[in-house]
Image (tube, rainbow over the protein chains, first blue to last red):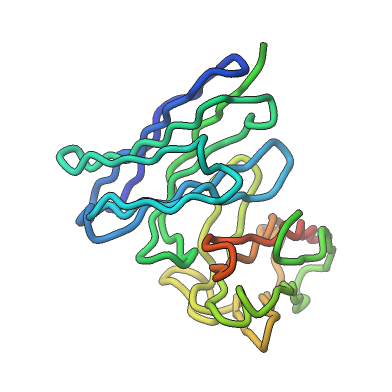
Length: 119
Length: 110
């Protein structure tokens, strides 16, 4: 069965960076794209960007360009998302999700990783 | 601050048919597919409708989607208490080169 398993909760100070992992299983890793979506407490969904698991090319939301980096390791079927220069507004649950293209067709989601930014 | 527009909240009674709307523009809904998600608080969103009107396996046929021009709708028939959740629409935006979401509609089943 398809699974996306994310790393655990993080607490970071403002200005620091956070690295969240997303390990995929149950399907051919390189046949899909992994998108990252976040949700601040009590708020809606916000798209951060996408990585092509095959070629590794990325597309980031303009709001996060320069602060977000997505990479993948095909040997372990894992995608990594690093968000740098954290501020309090980055406190949110971060989800990885699978798509067959650049579309928003998210059929499987990770369980979410809560990142708390606090001094 | 959401590119797609949804009513923030709504309420309905069990057994009723209810529709949630999502309004966008030419770069997103007007030129791309629409997706609908259901989210129960504390859990990850779940795909309800893909490519405007297709249901993934396991999603009851009480849920249906449609699109016309730059707007889309999610209809839920035979409302049940466990349909109480937040519902989000999503689409690709050609101008922003990214996925955009609606702000979500919180549905309360009275």
